[in-house]
Image (cartoon, rainbow, N blue to C red):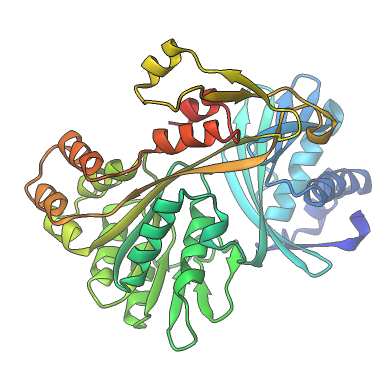
Length: 407
């Protein structure tokens, strides 16, 4: 219920008492916005979208990979709702022609929830998205993520090495953070110092020192990484690497005898290597520090109660370029009461693991083409995202269309 939620603005509130009497503080608007947020949290939504239309706001919430309509706001209240969210996020309610962002916290029972608000001016008013971060203890283990058994075993072996750079890569929303924390849980021990620095702390790990940049911090993320490494952790976890300075600080930290886990946006494992080189990382430094790269995707999981099997014809097999088992069956969505007639329940992850060999490191140092490095990796047994995806299609976990669309 709404009255069980305590809203805590993270930024300084507006001090002018006249402005505080604005429409953003009208009781009906406050109740409207608070109920929208409360209802979304009750259902475990990760995003709330306020999409401006001529008639008002269309409100949709994201659960898993799908958006569903959860309500509407009348045109006459549209501006007031935007102002309410600006006040909560500590933004300027007098400005509606520029992008803005803000942050606030919610205490709901024992739950601590962080909400990030992003506003963009559009044709019919301000488009608003609230990203919801549920601060919970990390519990997912690597063997619960859905990795191919061979990939899982190889990755655990890589982590057991106990030093070097481990990159967790993929597009936004692909579950990188979950995999990173599961990796930490695999290796953390009481006698080791584990530290992390992440723009958003979604999970908490007992025995790990965790930090994040505050709003308007006077230091850069790269400086934070360098400072963290000077604390001499045995396990260092770094949020998204986005530029040359962050990449260099991360790789320098990996040369000490420690595990450095870092997230990065990349299309596949080999593309991640190219991204770091493009950022200015010297190939010989990358080859010397790199221990493993994971690349992943999250796609819709078929409802097991109503999925429909069908026979795979030869034309599809030829197009895929992958030899399938005899009488292979794929599956498609149907819809039933158990999945609210969507045909899907939850998500399934696809994984690709790159482990550098002596030959692959030589190719990186020699600045050979990404195509050549990828071909050598396949020759050495790399299981591509595509192959992993098709194996999960054959298991009835996903549709072929969703797998191919994710690549």
